[in-house]
Length: 343
Ligand code: EPU
Image 1 (cartoon, helix red, strand yellow):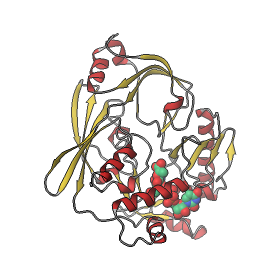
Image 2: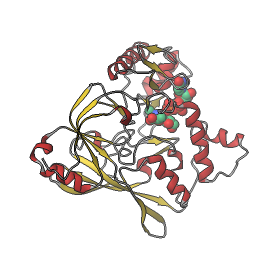
Image 3: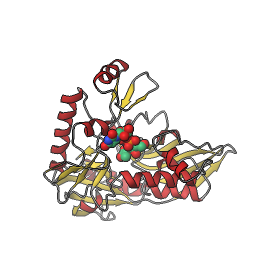
Image 4: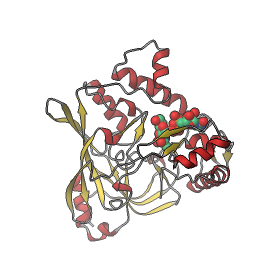
């Protein structure tokens, strides 16, 4: 084994996942840069181990009490303007930075565009995996490219927006590149011509209540932080992974049928003619909001968020998720897909 690498053994992951679930990693490495991944690649034993790349651990459900592979915890840091073409600013940021810290840095330095994604938990490197999004903006809208280490070739590769095949909470990193690429850094392109995006949900009404008619990017960021803090539980207080299910997509025909018995069903038209339905509403309608099963619970302010009520094992959260899926299926005929990865 490469003695240069500070590999730890039997490391508790409890403080490294936002659900706060106990699980032990057989091997664990803090990745400070691509050289650490190259060293893992060169080591014939380490190279063959199953790998779990860990960012902020905010989109993860640890269902096994042990992970018999190597956890690669991304801790590489740095963010800087890479270039400016007069129209847009290109900013490069390392995978190990916290997403929210990065958003705050862009606003402080006068590069708006990411403010609607304020306070999303997790790291920058995890953000493209599920194409994070909130309040009408998705990562892909301001993404330019990323660099990743390829465990097939042992080389760095660069991917642009098209290569990443982004869609709603999805990308190539959840599919063919899942166990192959480790994201090292991202480049964002932020146009200098900024327009506010306040059409989604409560954002406009929160700003209006504050008497703001011509919001700055900072105003929008503050409003979104306030909305998120009101609705979503703080993982430092109550373990959770944000939205536990994706909002399902249905055809116009299915929506019309659902509307006959449920006229208030919240739905959002998509560019392909289909409609996205609010999973939180479906769960709420099944009576799950604020309910508990074992040590796993459903958040009382947002039914889409499952919480660790204290000392829950991953299996208890998974059992609650299954019960919710069964009820939603029985009442609405809709399948809910979990957002977090089950490990
Ligand atoms: N609703 C209910 N009951 C609930 C929860 C929601 O009736 O318990 C209704 C709301 O009243 C609203 C609709 O469902 O009409 C949608 O709710 P909300 O605006 O809170 O958004 P969401 O669709 O539940 C999505 C993202 C969130 C993101 C918000 C804002 C997904 C799976 N979730 O939630 O992302 O912050 O929109 O853009 O797409 C995350 O991914 O972790 C996350 C928090």
